[in-house]
Length: 59
Image (tube, rainbow, N blue to C red; front, side):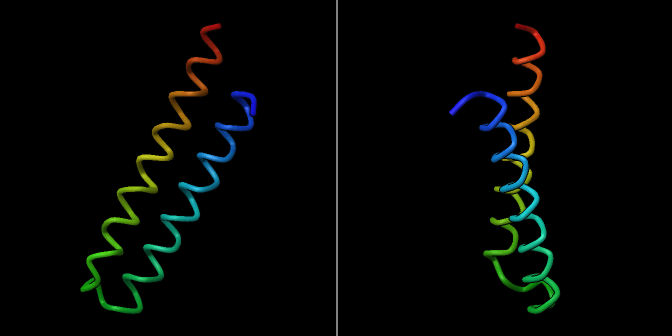
């Protein structure tokens, strides 16, 4: 897998996890602990995807 594909996968997975956590929070009125974990994982994937993009631009 090249860097561009890895970045795209990280960004799409991050956005999917953020959407999933939002739906879960709405369904449980913010009481599900898993929704916070999914939100943090989604944000982490978006940050990771951004770092891959920055590394690729520096090369």
